[in-house]
Length: 406
Image (cartoon, rainbow, N blue to C red; front, side, top):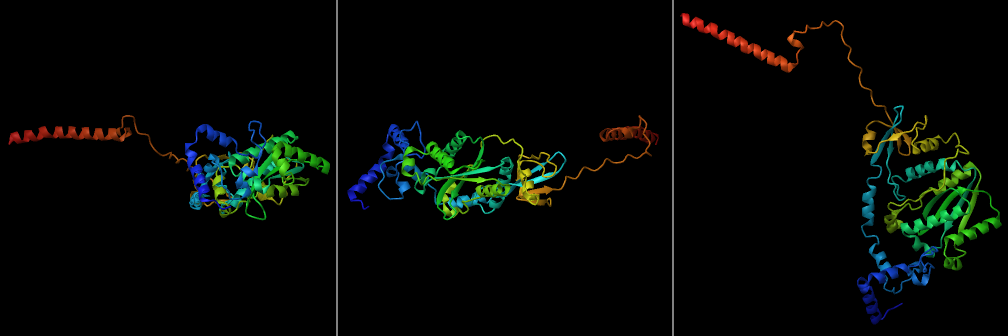
């Protein structure tokens, strides 16, 4: 669309007048922003693409809107790549030392945990699998839910707050359907392209569902999660997928898939990388204190040992490991010639015990109490000085008598 000069002047004056808006007007405009979720407190929760041109990916003249200006003001700067490179330079630079009650010492290398970090991506994924493994082992059978929104509405989940709200609504909805515990985790990119396409994976205690029962549950989840407008306009695109896992091998495969990194290159979306700073990609709800229902294959000893270390336990004896709070440079760990356990964990040699006490000889004679050699060195020096003074005073009178006789 080509704007006339008069229209351009009106648009520029409207944008320039944002600072002169009263606080009440600004709050009113911000409260009318479309949202993805139904809300009782917000009467304007119905999502309308005509009022949100960012989702339509079309260039059009926007009305005076402080929310739109805030998005521009908080956009990623041109120095994003440089700043992120500076932050990732310290990845794997630090380490923490720990020990168990038997005296065994361990070291753990600290990672930044960012999905697009080439230094620690593999270690972070392996540690994430090891942390979730004790919980997954408590499932006799697994249900895998996947919640996907249309690509047109993906910009509404660009912020940490919106993703947190969406995840909370999904977890609350699943709990209302009878799932007492679960493990949610975000994937930010698709498998076939590098566009921002968020979808939430959830692992629960599941069972085989008949097609009619599954359709009924999906319809109920759509009603509890999405707004009425979204359900009417994108009913087919509000994809909710469910799969059933009944063997340990299938559950381990699903666990590794859900915990893998999808945002593996910062060049795909530098603004998203800055936005994800400090966000938790995964979580859990419910109680996970039951006994394991199945065990790993005996050949997978590295994963079992890593799972014990991630729980803070000795991989062999099961004794708790006490990790020091103060980190040290990782180069100091390498100076002790450690033995690698894999995925950033090391065993350190034991600290050398102090030398035994010196043997006391038996052929020494004890000095008498009056012997001056039993006094401290300072007292000895005072005694020696007093003796010299007395000797000098005793020698002076004898010399004077000899001179008088002559």
